[in-house]
Length: 92
Image (tube, rainbow, N blue to C red; front, side, top):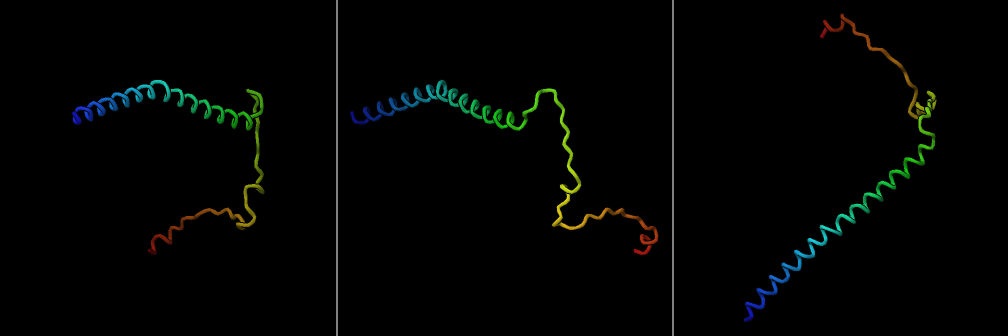
């Protein structure tokens, strides 16, 4: 009888776990995912609604000056142009 009781307990736990799993995947998981998506959507909307406070259809232009682009700690910017010397190519 001991073997039969153990077998019935195993079958009962398998049935119980499958029932709990069905309930979880049918009700709890979709509820949790909807809640998660709504939170992420709210964060996204809050972030972008704060940074874009202008009306829809408005056009804004922002210019950066050359002084703000060049970091003075890096050094002086020198614009150069590479010149192909035909005589140098024959020497090598």
